[in-house]
Image (cartoon, rainbow, N blue to C red; front, top):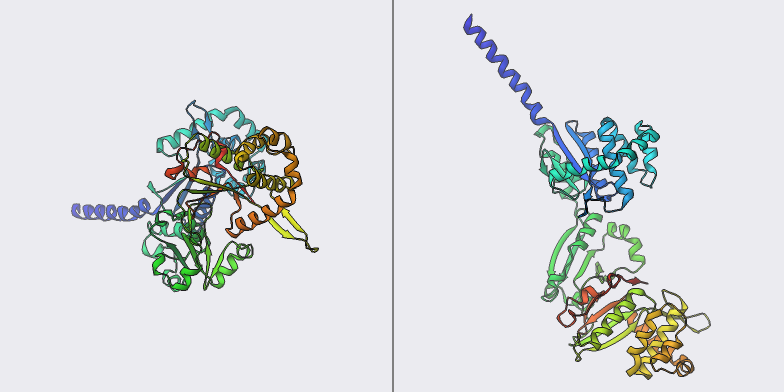
Length: 476
C-alpha cells in the first residue's frame, strides 16, 4: 500500500509537471516601446496586434516613450502634442489597462490632433473626466513613462519578445516569423516559404566603381525593398556591365530596377514624372541628393560649379559662405568658381521666349541681371551679389548695383542680352537635371547637394557655415 501511494503521488506529480510546463513556455510576451506619433512604431504595433489576434498565446504590452533633456524637462520628437499623448497612454495603462488596445486601435485611425477624444469614446472612457485626470497628473504620468524606459535603457522604438530584443523589420511576415521562433511545430504560422521562394522579385542592381563604392546609399535599397519585398539585390562593378549599358549610364552609384509588370504598376507615378532613366530592361535611379559621379562630364581639378536660385534663402546663404571663403583665402585661388542658375525656358505658341523660376518672375529677372553683370562687370560680380543678397527677395536691385559700382542703366539697356544668356544657362543646368538650390559640381564631375556635402572635400573643408539654414535647399 505504501509503495502504491508513492507511485500514485509520483504519477500525479509528473503529470502535473507535464501539464504545467507548456504553460510556462507557451505564453509569448511582446513588449513595445514607441513614441505615439512615430509611423514606424504604429506599423510595428499594428502588425504585432494582428499576430496577437492570430496566435492566442501572444501577450502584447505597449508602452509610450518619453525623453528628458539636460534641464530635466520631458520632451518628445514631435513636440508638446506628442508629450501629452504619452501622458494619455500612461494614464490608460494606470487606470484602464484593459481598454488600452481599443484606444490604440481607434487612435491609429484618428491621428489628427484631437482624435484622442473619439478614441477614448470607442474604448469606453469618459473623455472629459479622463482629460481632467491627465492634466492634473501629467508630470507624474510622464515620470512613470520615463522611468520605465530608462530602467530598460532605451530611448528609441524598441520591441522585446520574451525579453529578447526584436531586430526584424516592421513587415508582417518578419513579425510572424519572429513569433514562430517561440512556437512548437504544429503551432507555427504557415509562411508558405517554399511557395514564396518560387516567386521571383524584380532584379535590383547597384552599380558603382572604385571611386563611388563608398557612396552607395543603403537607404535607397531599403526604400525599394519596402515596395518590393522579394527584391533580388545585386551589387555590381561598372566594369562588369555590358558595353551598351555602360555607355548609357549617366551617374554612379546607379540603382537599376528591372522593368517587370509589378514595377511598372507600383512606380507608374514616378515613371510618368521622369524620376527614372530608361536603360534596356531596367529603370535607373540616380540619387542626386547625395554624392554622385557624373559619367558624361570630364574631371577638371580645381573647378567648382555652383547652382542656385537667386531668391532661394539656402542658395543665397551658400553663395555668401562661398564668396566669404574665396575672399578670406579659405578656398584656394587656384579654384575656378562658376555660378549657374536653376529655372526653365520655353517658347509660347507664338514663338516668344518665356522663363519660369520657382519664386516667380522677379527671380528669373534677377538671375538674368546677375548673369549679365558677371559678363560685363566680372570684377564687380561678387560685390553685387553680396549687396543684393542682403535683401534678395526685394524687387529693388538698383541700389545694390550702385553700391557695387555697377551701372543700372547699362544692365537695363542690355536686358535682352541678359535673357539670351539666361536661356543658355538654364539649358545647360537642365541638361544636367539639376533642380535643387544649392547644388555643386566638384572637380568637373562630382555632384553634391548643399554646403555640408561640399565641405567633405579637402579643398572646401574650411568654408564656414554660419547659419543652420545653409543645410536646406529649394527644389523646383
